[in-house]
Picture 1 (cartoon, rainbow, N blue to C red):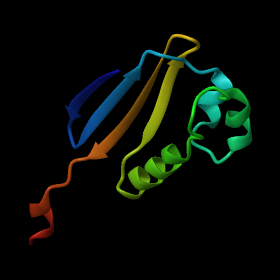
Picture 2 (tube, one colour; picture 1 turned 180 degrees about the vertical axis):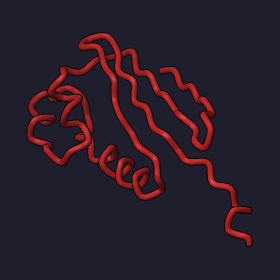
Picture 3 (cartoon, rainbow, N blue to C red; picture 1 turned 90 degrees about the vertical axis):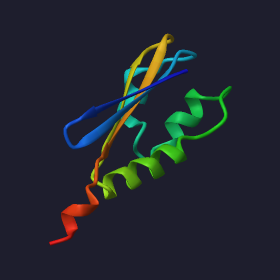
Length: 93
């Protein structure tokens, strides 16, 4: 696993690479939706059902960030998300 961060203007971009397994395009398309039946069939050997990803997506969106996945089937997956940089002094006027 490799984790990198980059500051870009008013946000931080975090990229997490997992080199153990990649995903099919259909999995990538549905990974942040509550369609768990698809993942249960595809991930019989792996534990977890992706519920944590739904929670992370919701939290990031509420804070102005976003999350996405990029993957090469049977090679690697990259989970990426942005976190806004909040300036506490902006509220003091």
